[in-house]
Figure 1 (spheres, rainbow, N blue to C red):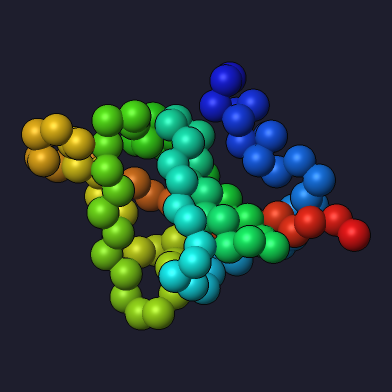
Figure 2 (figure 1 turned 120 degrees about the horizontal axis):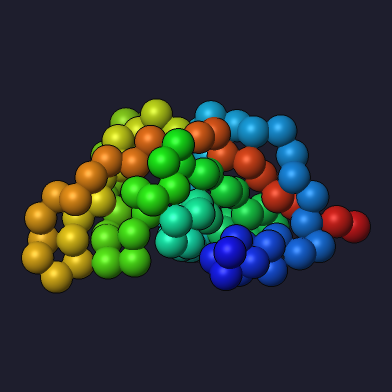
Length: 105
């Protein structure tokens, strides 16, 4: 619940758009994992949120390793989790589509 509240605070003042399958990935954008909730990609004026089919796959001690197939990040890209301290594979994350949240005017 605390992490859902964190996501809600990040999205305050924004409106959800139609989900998209792929998003641009400019170097200035920031990727944040909210444990047990979602992967959040902040591209400035748009924040993209992708919720995994199994939220428990996003753990606190994991690092995301994303195998991209092109210049964009797509919900079908392979996302693996690796233990932060041991360096071993801990799982695979299956993302839903990216929901764009834009600032309201």
